[in-house]
Structures are given as structure tokens and as C-alpha cells.
Amino acid sequence: MASKQPRYRNPDAVLDIWEKPKFGQWVGLSIQHLFSMFGSTVLVPILVGLNPGIALFSSGVGTLMYILITKGKIPAYMGSSFSFIVVMQSLMKAGGYPAIAQGTLAVGLVYLLVSLLVAFIGSDWIDKALPPIVVGPIIMVIGLSLAGSAATNATIVNHHYSLLSFGIAIATLLITIIFNMFLRGFLGLIPILLGIVFGYLIAVLAGVVDLAPVAAAPWFKVPAFQIPGVTYPIGLHLDAILSMAPIAFVTMTEHMGHIMVLNKLTHRNFFKDPGLTHTLAGDGTASMIASFVGGPPITSYGENIGVLAITRVHSVYMLGGAGLFAIIFSFVGKLSALIESIPSPVIGGVSFLLFGVIASSGMRVLVDNHVDFNEKRNLMIAATILVIGIGNASLQIWGLTFSGLSVVTVLGIAMNLLLPKHASNEEVTDGTDE
Image 1 (cartoon, rainbow, N blue to C red):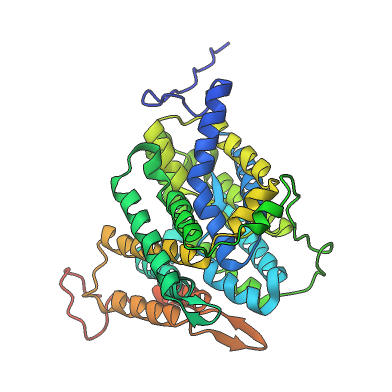
Image 2: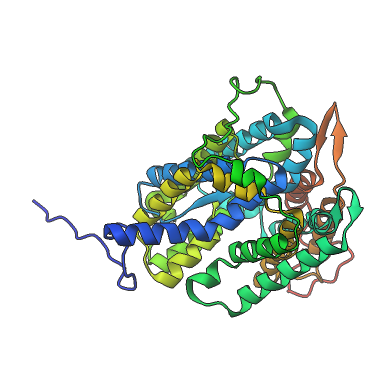
């Protein structure tokens, strides 16, 4: 009988993926991961008009399901996705949360469908459909198209310009930048959360925060879950489905990027074990769960990967603990009331930086992959995506409305597949005759 092969252990890790920390360590390290994702996860529902407590709940449950589906082999946390904010804001005005719920469900189903395709035909087709020249500009659109929302939050109060509001926003922005630049260790991983906290304190001193709802809120409160067929009637929102589903292909590239970073960090190959099929299915399942309780689409979080890198504690039990504590915190009524009391200038100040970072990440995709804009093909694709997307040239047809972001996602993929490598009037310098 062959002897059982010993389990691989990463020599660089303090605790490897499958190792259990002591109870005290587990509590502290889990809450550390909770704090690292907290600011971004609750900011998404605040910007869209959703319940932050439900977003916490769905991120926690989604993380636990992701760990289960990936067989406990990948230390990753699932939080609210920023990629869908523009579309969700539009849908919230037109159809309310029921429309967002169907779009979120469609996003999860797209992930599951792609995971099945990957299982049968591999993943090379994803790289062909979504190369850097398509992904980079789309990510830039996601960030830049939110600039107007950030400016409004920072300057407008009751439909009038407020110099005090703008001052609070700029102070919040500057504090967050300082934290980003000068804090180290774990504190250096939560500058957004710290920026919100200090901006909130400034707003309290300026007298623009109403703390009465926080004082009146109970300590224990069940989140106002949005359940289809229970809290709202089930109806078809085709525009929501067709607007949000295409963007899922963009977030997949971010998902795979996170997996690559985790591969390098943990000295493993998660594309092989448990496989991209499982990672995509886990991500998609998390979004589907969110759609049934009132949360936004879910995706893996780079903030938590940063915590893994600094602490060198890779135990999956910590991420599960963070998910568990997120669920518990979602039932703390005073916490939800405190989050909802954050004034718009604080959100605007943080958003100036956060949305700019998203846009800059798209630019980084282009730079890191050495995209050549001397090639007309690349110039045509990027120019089309940027102007239509940032201008939000929505498509209204057959009674349906598709946001500019969803339009350029489909258009960018189509242009990439159909345009020749070189224009007919373009001089080719690489030695080819194309």
C-alpha cells in the first residue's frame, strides 16, 4: 500500500491555509480582516441607496459559501463590488431594489455559466474576448463615470452649494491621502475606513451629523432583508438583467487577477486546484445569495489579500471568521444606524480618491501590458469605450434602457473580436504583412 503523500506547507507562511490558529488569535485576526474590507463593503450600498447591514450580511454569507465551494483551499474574502455602482444607481431610480436584485442574480448566473464553459473548454477564450485594451478602458469608465456623483456628494446640500460641505469633503480626502502615504502595517491597509472615521468626526464637530437615529436605534435589529416574493412582488426587469450581466465579464478579469496574486503569495496554483471552475462558481454563488436578501453583487477583495501578504497568516479559518463576524455585525442595529448617519460630504471626500484609484487601475492595466496606442486599432477601441462610457450614452430600445457602461462592455468586446490587427492605411513596423 502506497504511503500517503504529506500535505504541502508554504515555508514563508506563519500559518498556512489549512492550519488552525488558537482561539484568541482567530478572533483577533478575523476581526482584522473584517476591518480591512469594512469601509469599501459598506460604501457601495451607501452610494447606491441599499441597506449597509444587508451588504455586510451578504458579504459574510457569500464568503462562507465561497470557502465551501472552493473546498477550503483559497483564503479569500467576498465583499461588495464597485463595478456595478453606476448601473445600480440608475436602476435604483427607475425600478428600485427589485430591478437591482434581478441584475445581481444575472451576474451570479453568468459566473456559473462561465464556470461550466471553463470546465468543458478551458479559459483561453476569456483572454481573447477581454484583452487589456478592452478591460483597461472599461475599468477607467467605472471610476470616471462616478466623478459627478462624488462631486455632488461633496458640494450639494438640499439642492444648494455648500462651502462647509466642500470643506469637510476636502479635509476627509486629505486625511485619507495622508493615511495612505504614511501609515504602515495593518493600519496602512485600512486608510479608507480610517478616512471615513476621521471625516465623520470632523463632520460631527461641524454640526452636520444627526446622531438622534443612532441613539434611538436598538442594539439588536434584524436587517430589512429584501426577499423576492415576500417583501416585494416578483416581476421581470429585462433592462436590469441586460445592463448588469455584461459587466460580469469585466469583474471576472479582476477575479482572476486576485487568484494570480494569491497563487504567488501562497506558492500554489489555484487555477489547477481547486480550479477556475470552482473559484468562478464560488464568486457567482455569492452574488446570487446577495440577490435573494437585498445586497449588491459580490466579488473578491484585494484589501484582504493585502492583509494576507503583510501578516503572512494565510489560514482560511481567518477568512471564515471574518465572514462570521460580518454576519453578526449586520444584526447590530446601532452599527447600521451609525453607518447610515455618515454625511454626504464625508462620502464625497473618500469617493474623490476611491473612484480616482479605480480609474487609475484601468490605466495601470494598459501600462503594465504595454498597450501601444500608435496602433489605430487600440486607439479606436479605447476612444470609443471612454467617451460613450464616461458620457453614459445609454441605449433605449424596445422600452428597455441600457447604461453607457453596459453598452461599451458589449461594444468593446465586439470591436476587439472584429477589428483587424492593423488598419489598411497603417504602416506596419513589426515585420508582418497584416
